[in-house]
Image (cartoon, rainbow, N blue to C red; front, side, top):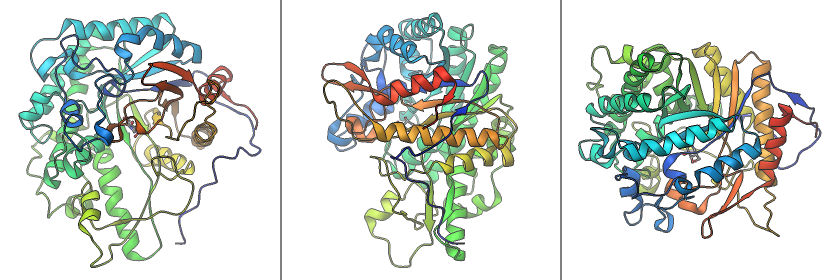
Length: 477
Ligand code: IFM
């Protein structure tokens, strides 16, 4: 195999044909509770692992926290008006578990539920379909203190919380996502520790991944009864994993990383089993004794939709013996058992996160999920890019982000033409927000947020996206 395909440069919009999406295609934008809400200590909300983590010295860039974020908690009405001006058909938000169920167990917090009820009502009054994600990384701190996701009981707590939300919003919300990107929760939170709760133990990461999926399965079972007619799903972040060359060592490195990044979740959720090669790769880390009889059947409880978050591709190479400085190993600790695999760059354009821009990888990813795993409707539940934005004369002309969206929407269309039942696309993100360990230093939004004044400026990409939605497709370039 030669070097992996180099994606076309993004940044230049050359001649491209107009493209129309299927009728009813769900055009949306996404956010997450801790990244935008702020009001960390209001309305009865208690701490999540991200409050604790971000308030711990050295965990986030410049000590940034989500205490205030975009102050969306107090600006809900104005923010929904901006969504309506964009013409969004759907808005994907997440619920802060410790806001609605302080401490992660016991009764619901009326004030917390009120916030989401007002949000949903406001969305519906503006003709915007609410898309609710139950878990976007903000585990109540008390549940972490009791063991966190490596502890089996957290899965049961999650199903209880799902029921509490079904009770509050089941009459109005049709689309329910259990987890957002369980790979990040498990392997960044408990493996490399660069995300909350900041623990670093490969076996715990694997256990966390399993219990997240168990919680997902239990929640789907509970929601299936509690919310008849709901569209239930999960969102996984997927990457094509390409070997740096056709050398057997590189091909094996790609197999291993694909196992940990993609198949760790796709196989149990959509096939009801862990892949044998992944179990073998992880043998030195865990004996999978945490998997009880019946777990995999629960995890594979039938779904209605699958959400795919796509940002980039991994290109990997075989370990080089002796070449493993400590800092390098730590960064790789999110790949238990395969810490020595090398991640290589191809010199193609990258975003401000340093992630290679690779729109063809989205076609590959969507086709793989459809062709190898499921006939279920798919949604791109996140796709987007961080770039450095500048406000000039009150405007933000984010041409690179716009080009990124354009390329990935063309890729989405190509996937549909190839037979993928892709039913919608959610831009990440509606507005700039707290980018986890990076704090406010990375901007992914279509709407610029001035964090000091809490003002919003729709960027060029937002105006362009509004036009895409209006046309149900892309104009010729
Ligand atoms: O900001 C995150 C989001 O919370 C989850 N998916 C990836 C985004 C960009 O890093």
